Image (cartoon, rainbow, N blue to C red; front, side, top):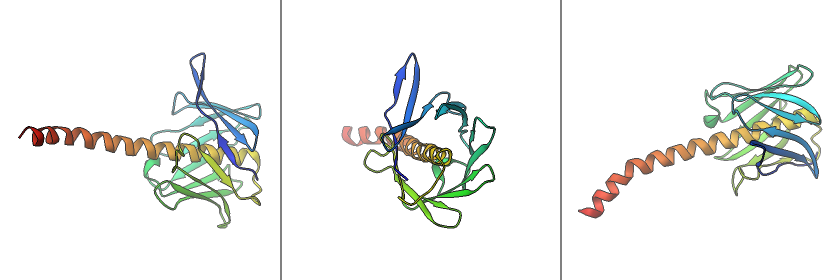
Length: 179
């Protein structure tokens, strides 16, 4: 299977979207707002996506199937493992090997792909699929969406921690230099 690549955010008529390509072919366009309930168009079919602050991510496909991704922690930003259920017809597991490095495995442990937030990974997420990974397009697209959501959640979480730390340290630094 070819790699899945996220394009840059684009805004047209007040709507912000992200495109997803499989190799050199665009396969999906994702709306980004509202965050907890938005839509995607995958090969001409509309999906409803739900990404709440805590709990599983969900995609309701045009045919009514529901794919879910359940993190092992209440918040996605803290997850070390995400279990994906393809509407009862198979599973995949996302394993966080390092801070921003993830591996996607089939339920039997076979490696399907990997992705990373290093080197501007949130701006240009590439889900590197194994050449022999034989995933249907709907599963590959859902995996790519989960990968993007996982990286964005971790980035937002670390940004908040950094901001709060700087706000706390600023008065101390000013006091130190004035004395």
